[in-house]
Every structure is written in C-alpha cells, then in structure tokens.
Image (tube, rainbow, N blue to C red):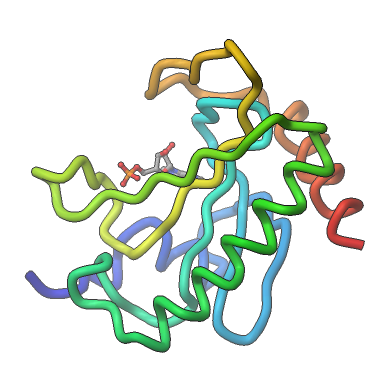
Length: 138
Ligand code: AMP
C-alpha cells in the first residue's frame, strides 16, 4: 500500500482545506476532529508522509507520540477530564478511513461513553474547545 498525497490530512497539512489547529512543531500537527466522539477530541499527525503505524519510521512514531502525550496532558487540564482514550487504526480492515498516520486523543469522564462515530460537530463549539486546549498548553 503506498501513500496517497491527496488524502485529506495531507491537504490539511498543505493548507488546502481548513482545520482547527491546536498545536504544531517541526515534526507534528494537532487539530480538532470534525466528528468529535467526545468534547475536545483531537488528532495528532506527523508532518511527513506515512499511511499508518505499519510504514511509519521510528522517528515519525517517536515525534508523534511525544505530541500525543503533550496534548493528552493538555486536554486533561483543559476539560478537567478523568482520563484520556488514545485510538489509532491501521488499514481499512483495522478501521482506518484516512490514510495518513493519526492518533485520536479523546478526553473521557467516569461513566460517560464516547459518542457514536460519524456525526459532524458544531464548528463554533469545536473552536471554543480548541481555544481551551491552546490555553492549557500555555
Ligand atoms: P480513522 O481513519 O478511522 O481514524 O477516521 C478518520 C478520522 O478523521 C475521523 O474521526 C474523522 O472524523 C476525522 N476527519 C475526517 N476528515 C476530517 C477533517 N477534514 N478535519 C478533521 N477531522 C477529520
């Protein structure tokens, strides 16, 4: 399986389609998921191409995980969450829909289930949540 540079996250990285960005460094970008399964649901991606964990380099994985940890700590603080679920899917059979490596970071609360997938979030609500995350990052 080869990397398709026309995938939607590659377009987000090139600024060809909009996204609500919360953090970036030289190697990684974090932005809000448009179909949030919990308040504050965000995605972390490498800035360089790879489909998923199966073809990622150790360097891509290391830099992405560093950002996943940073954003997990930020959402705990921003949303006073009880925990964080980190999700990651590999190839269609593994549940992957967008073929640029990404990790989901989902703030969680005791006794509260994740919302079902596939429901578009409210843009203004997501933008306000992004501001909270950015504030928690300092
Ligand atoms: P998966 O590949 O199964 O991890 O699913 C892709 C995820 O990307 C889903 O949670 C979608 O809601 C999310 N998504 C798809 N398009 C966009 C977009 N343009 N901006 C932000 N998130 C997106």
